[in-house]
Image: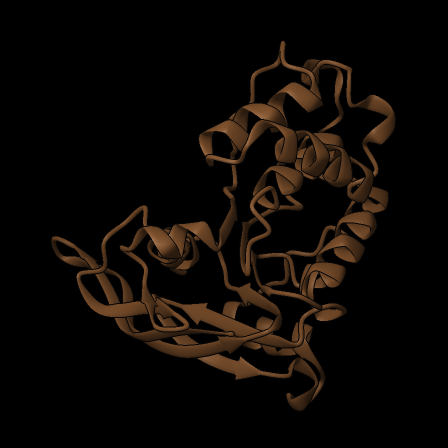
Length: 235
């Protein structure tokens, strides 16, 4: 499997949010790192078909981002995903499964499987309004995996989580990378330095680095510090 981002740009009037990014991603976990305002979320929204690139193309195994077949292989967890507080976790997953066109019997089986995967099987019948921030995020990941996606995109998934939840989340993401392409966007260095197969670093809308973080003298944190002046690390 291969995601190809070819000379993709996004411009808003006089501001260039993403500037001619080209990269190829294959199976594994990729950390998309950069300070707030670097262009990460704009790039992610183009990868998910929410925004249309000003120029360039995005394809997954030859399927264009604008095609229905592309959306069928995509799982997406936005930074602030919407949920219904009165829904139970199971109801929430079944609702999204219906939106994704998954047959009811298959949806129930998959929802139970995913609640187990994200360690929410014991609270599947409890209302989401009773959940902690970490539990809601894990439910969000389950939602993104309902259609067995080959491309999983997560935008700032650990924001606001406590250290224990963050470690649990990292372990889950690491396991997902064994069967799919996982792109994890964050501005927290420690979220990706232990699990990412490769790091993509953005600054001012451009891709300034791609590779293994340990190829940089001093490691990822020092390299990030040299580019942005400070490290945001809440682990």
